[in-house]
Length: 69
Figure (cartoon, helix red, strand yellow):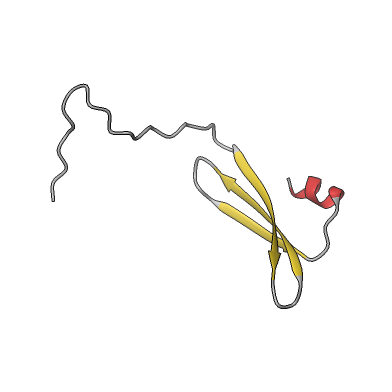
């Protein structure tokens, strides 16, 4: 199936993604529950290359979350 360009003046509802400088990371912290107990997941995603890094920790505190960020 071919994609045709929308008529002039027609909005498709899609927006271009915001561009980020190289090295801009998005960081999330989440709690994961397993059969063995509770884990804390730290995720860092490079917005430019979409490379993701994940660490799981059993015990966390403020100093660890600052270190990982």
